[in-house]
Each structure stands twice: as C-alpha cells, then as structure tokens.
Image 1: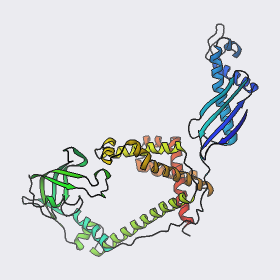
Image 2: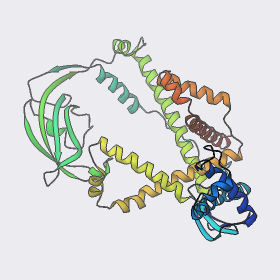
Image 3: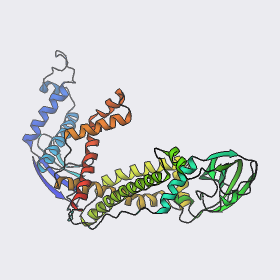
Image 4: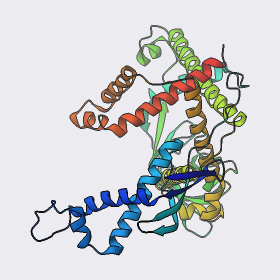
Length: 428
C-alpha cells in the first residue's frame, strides 16, 4: 500500500492511496472467508464452506464490491495509523481507479484536529480584580432577610408602596396577540421592589382586590430578554389580593431569629463575610475567563467545521429549550428579532460555536504542553462526589460506571486542572 498526504487547509486533509494487485489478493481471501460463513452449499455444514467454493456460488460483481469496500477500509486505517491522524468525521471516499484483482486507487478527504500554536501562556495580560463590598450591598442583603421574615396580612384597602399584591397579568402586543414571556398567574409582587419594568408597579398603586384594568407600557431598550427589548405591550391586570407587609425591626432579636447570632452586629459581620467570599469567587471566575480569552487571542487556533457544526447544534438545541420554558418558539423569536433562521445561525450562533471550539482546542493543547493528566484516584474521588450528589442509588452507580461517562468526567477534570494551572502560571 502506497499513500501520499496533502493538507488542503489547517483542518482539511486528503490522503491518496494505491493498493497493489498482491495486496488486493490478500484482501480478497479475507473477504471471501467472511462471506463464506453466510453461504449455503450442499454437502458443507453452515460456516464451513471453503473460500474457493464460496466464490463460485457468489456473483462476481458482489464479490468485487465487497473486496473494494474491505480494501478501502483496511488501507485507509493503515494510512491513518502511519500518519498518526484521526478523522473528525466520516471520510469522503472517491475511487479513481479500480480494476478487480489488479489495482485500486482512491482518495479520502476529511477534517482532522489542527496543529495549535500556543501563545506565551505564561505572560498573559489579565489580572485579578476583587471588588470591594459596599454598604449598599450589605443593606440590600439584610433587607432581603428582613422581607423573608415579614408578617403579611390581607387588607381591603387600596394598595400602596411596600404592600405585596397578588395578581394575574397577560401582556399583548399592538395587534392583540399574546406576548410570550409576559404572562403571570397568582404572581406575588412587592410594590417598590422595582423587580418589574418601569411603570408596572406604579400602575398597581391605589388599586384594590377585584380591580381589572389595562396597563400600556414599553419595555426598556436594554431589557435582558431581547425579544421584549423596546416592545410596546398592554398588560391586562387583575388584582386578586392586597397584603400589608410588616417588617421586623433590625435588632438583636431579629438577628437571633435569622441565624446563630447573638447580636445584630454579628449578623452584619456575617453578611459582609459572605459577600466578600462571593466577590472573591467572582473575581477568580472572571480571571479564568479573561486568561482563557487572552490565550485564545494570542494563539493560532484553526476551527474544524465539523466541530463548529456540532457546537452549533448543541447551542441551538439549548436555546430553543430555554425559549420553550418562556413560552416562546424559535419562529416567534426570529419574527420579533426581524431576522431569518439562516441569518441567526450564521451570525451570533456561529460565533459562539467557533469560540467554544477554539477554547476547547487551546485548553487541550495547553494540557499537553503542561503534561496535565487526571490520576485514577482523583477520577474515583470525583465519581464518588457525583454519586453522593445524585443519591448513591444502584441506578446512579450503574450510570457512573459507563465508560463514556467516566471518559467525559475525566476530560472535564483535566480541563479544570488546566485552567487552574493557567491561573497559577499567571499569578506568581
């Protein structure tokens, strides 16, 4: 078997292979031995038919076709092994010449993992920045604790700021169509919490239980849910209950009821400590993200299309699922965004997919450069942690024992260790 390899791009490879008559003869004997086990010939037991006898009882074109398939498979695998390359997708085979028993020439085209040229991963620019805890944040946390301990009593009067209102609401667009994600039933809303869009809570003030009315509003242009950003929506509102909220005083008794604290000062110190630890975690996560981003930018990371396509499918599937949770279909989302599915797929979604592939490839290359591997003990430790988390049932243990699950977890642990190593190298 002779072969030549040609890199058509950073990720696309073509291998041209020639199989000689002698090699075809060897492959043919193996093919006939395989086919003979399925041939029935009088005088021979099933599976015991000699290859030469089997050939006489098989159509020549069928034998030649099977030999061709076996020859392509064995020659291609041998070439891949010699060149130490692994196709990322099903290779495309193109037969240029096939003369049964004499010669075979064919090419295989496929994508493979590209060569990654890492940037100087020990001198990246990102730095850790920990935000300070301010009094407003502390006050807000304590306010939430205070709200959770509040006593609520149904009242007959009109609602005012500070009350909790139980309501139904249904948002409709200018054409009277229901707006997905703008509907609620038996929703509890504290007036003055600013948890709804501007104007909504103010529109409930002075309303009583039993009142029904329309509330025309415009969503902010920077609203977090893009389909509703800047949208004009009329809410059909029904007030079901108005509750007066009595907040407990912020004193030592309040602190003792909130947790293992003797004084209000101890509660406040605990809140500060929790917020400080939270900001430390957030700073660490930001640093990891920024270091990875710096590493991708400073490295040469070609992206195989087959991996990008796979990521695009995953992102689209998750996005559609999240839309369904909000009561919206992809078609409705695209209509609101005034775009087509093709434009959406080839725009932001493709960029996300390409970035995910680049991150995965660059971290895999870094793990090799730093010789990072997960030990058997560490993997078993993580598996035990997962088992405890999911209940340690026989079903859970059986699932965690699957080779593909163990392999996926091992890859995740290596990725975590690689990112931790990247942080270590850039924070000395």
